[in-house]
Length: 457
Image (cartoon, rainbow, N blue to C red):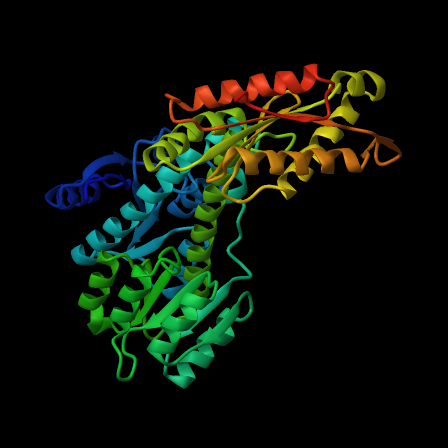
């Protein structure tokens, strides 16, 4: 998997060494000799992963990392801090600055390549979400990047799969200060619990008694319910080969025993924050998709949704020789309601009208605002006679109860005219059926309103 790796180091020999190593693994590289230049490259979107030296004059690596992670534009960019410092306190400082990993010089090539590949995969997924989520800003749904970057990574549901009672208790105590932790010593029960629960992070010991922790990680990555849950392996230094294999198939991070409690909490927080970052973006994507096919006032589908789905539905009905019917509903004298009570009251009537219509439709039906005060209902597997019955039921329901307006201080009598049509054998397309339903609606209006008219025989 190729990617653009930014190497940030104030010593040219160090830059060249990493460039050579990464080039042999088919990574593209770009370099910066100081913090401000690195930030500029990141903000312009010219890299996928940052290898960041800590000890630099002026703006050190910790400051650079904090800046990148606090900026919504670059917060999703994976940062691996590379330094000669090897104390737990140094790793902790890097992780607290927002680093995704921390490698000690001299850098182990296998660990470096495994971490870069793992983070590149995560970045690719995030980039796809990011591109789609940005559309929600144009739709007036706020800035998903700012919301995502503000995530703290605290108050999470954590599953700890560890059969060493003492170790499990110590880790649970450390994590329990900021999260809710469940301990499960058995791999199969852990798999079931993970599939049934809603965990924000799962930690798995690689040397479970009688079980293969790496296989459990693989199973968790393959299940739909747990595919996006961050996984952290807990292993020994001599298990580095297995750890690299785990990173290669998608495990997010690892900790080596003896586990430093501060590093443990920092790495879990990083993974939870990243997961929630992606969830905010997914939510923004879903909201923008919903907005694109939903009428903002009534909550019904909009004309775009109707146009994009009706043709396929009608074609399938024709192919299978199945019935399908269309109802076009138009609120009677809606302009008078607007003129008498105001446009705000007219909006209240439209919302209530949509709610009542929905009560008499099925989940398989298409209910869409056609424009103004018109609503279209498409009824799959419904013939003309049954469609007339449904239309009459809706008409009676609308007439039966006056509509509350002006914050329920007044009531307005409302009626509706409905035109009904069904698919005929000679119809070439859905438009033919819709034209007959429109003509039937015209007759209902002409014949006095508040009535149902079906297509002419």
